[in-house]
Image (cartoon, rainbow, N blue to C red; front, side):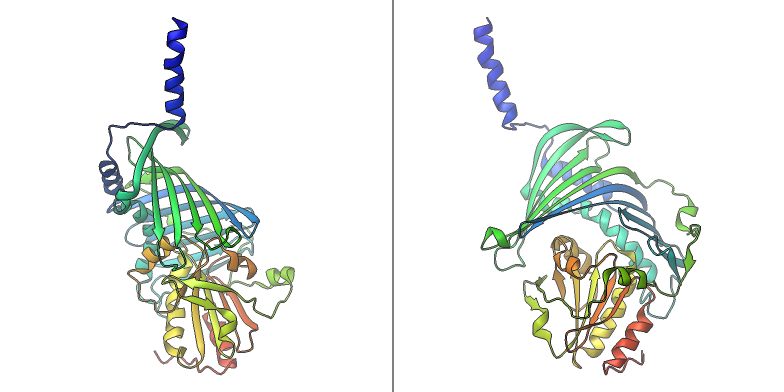
Length: 403
């Protein structure tokens, strides 16, 4: 009996180890239910842990952070980001926007709809859209149904309890890079009852001529909390300054600069933009270059990018080159920008290699480079427009605001 049973058991073990799986759920139906869950949300709250592992040129780097996002439409937003070195908190309601940086024990306070350029345009809708894009990404998974597969059903721990999930795999190829593109493989754990994403593991790899030139990015996101269309307390969207925090017009980075040491020469780099066109900093010698390091999830970036766009339009034919640098997956940047009116080039820095060599510790970070290739201005966060304009004026640009 045992001799007859053993081959049968062995066959089952081999089948399971090769990940043979049959599910009664169709990919299209599953993604439609996820879409319906995330579509047209009026309020939501996410708490997640992010682990990013980058491998480039034989070097490995690991970054861990905690992210908390909350929104009540149309204008209440709270974003809190923590890692081992810093904490950044951005809060906005109908009247006021605060940005707090724990490392400096400083915060900036501004009127949400002020007319001085820091919240250019519809400040409320811009900051709201920052968190909205985070949820909107899962509302558009149906667009990738042709490249998706249900792998298995699996239990995972979430919020202190075990939850049965569908495990979904999908592959996308960003074709902006004409030398082969950037391929991303994503695995998602989807709650079988709520149809919310509880975990995502994405692996991004740039296609390169040699293995040494390739870059790999592994990102793991675990959601510890997902509240959709549930009431959120009003005091969540009011900033209470921590003990010892002080209000400033703009963040004082002198302690950071002192620890880093003054480095005037701008490091050279070469990146491609979202259309696959190459940009090299050294080739811009003789022109001034303004770099904005930004991300789609960054609330202060939403306020500062219109200022940068205004400078680009005004001085692009007078010797000022303006570029944005984003270290997210290109699809995330593309999705964020598709309904925006920004015309300055956006460069792809997957893995944040250029951000690392420029020692970007928080975003938005602005770096202004003069015609000789030296860094003459560096600032982080909101409230730096006046100093930026003064630096540009010293370089020969008439920055008197005629708008």
